[in-house]
Length: 325
Image 1 (cartoon, rainbow, N blue to C red):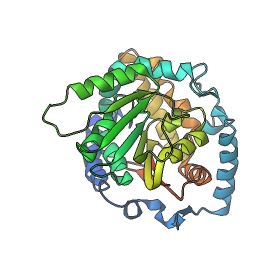
Image 2: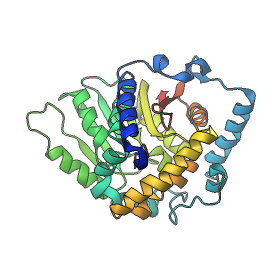
Image 3: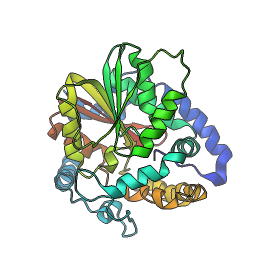
């Protein structure tokens, strides 16, 4: 569920804001992260710089996350954040999480477009651009869902390239394969390989891919550090991966705004589509997700030579972690 939430009570002004945001965000596509992110001042030689207080906080959070012990309620600052039974249990694959994504598969794309006003397409193009993918590359889309990024990657690598989409929800893969079949036959692209598998135990050899994308998936795995290590393992030396997801805002105002919109827009709209319970999962999953600084530290610890997290407009409610092996 990749969603930028909007205030339905003020839809006209929101639409105007979204149009302006598309113009701003589109400038990110094809440009260097160092030129588009506020975080460049924190990076020298690929090492994230923070003030001492932030670094200590990040270190404590990383230690908790590494052990899989970050408490949802503590991260959210509330005791109201609840996840489906078993959704965050440690283990290679959680049936609770898999069931969630299998259930939402039929309405996944439509809800993404509605709740993001189409902005998720811009964010995804930005993530792909930051991987540096080019014609003839072999690329992997982890947690590929309904195939949005994998299909976009296919246009980037061309007919001589190779694209693999991996997800643990079989219904999502069925949707992805169906979308691929519906594409015009004249579109010059490689046939995508769809794999049902585990992001914590990628079924690929070391150094297999020239670029990797992971959108709206790292937040949902049971062991984030292990997932990052797996990404690094299958990525070729010198190549990049881009991890796109919700931000967990450090600014209390933005955090409260995000929480309000999730409760009062996203879940009610999902309820109209018969998937209310599934979208109640979003809030606790964001609450347990590391901040941008914490993600940078975790990626460095996983062995990446360079890691930088970038807030995406509007408002930094979405973010992209760009890592280099």
